[in-house]
Image 1 (cartoon, rainbow, N blue to C red):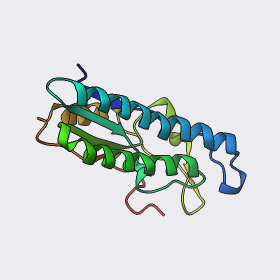
Image 2: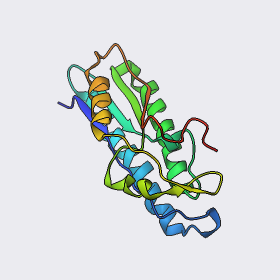
Image 3: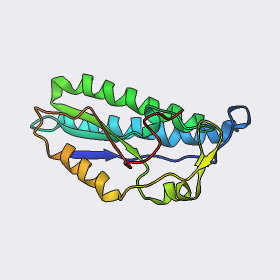
Image 4: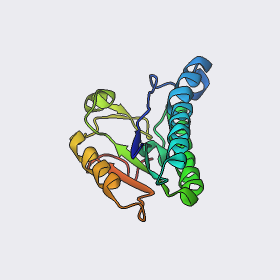
Length: 171
């Protein structure tokens, strides 16, 4: 029986202007962030549809970049927007089988992937600025909340971000 999957695929490449992004880098990010999420969601969906009783919960890891892009990150931005499409499609198609699907969009959790943000990252206005990060336990708490809901309720999207990060008003 599969009761829950947290679909946590995500890689990025070095910040690269659109015109300089190597196609192989594009393909690598798409393979992990979009195809990986699709394949895991599809496998979970199939299992949840066939089990008795049917259903349970799929939680996809989106990103703040699913809503507001970062400069020089077209592959990451595009794939995280794509995760939103996967989430909404699975939520829609899963209804008859009691399969709930939601997405957590995380902004600047203190992980290895965001380490560089403390030293400064490119902003939409062309400047470099340090960005605050939050304790990853806040993300875990949000996931536990989503996972703990009864199946007649679903959090379709939730955003958890460092309070002072430049998301609101980015650009």
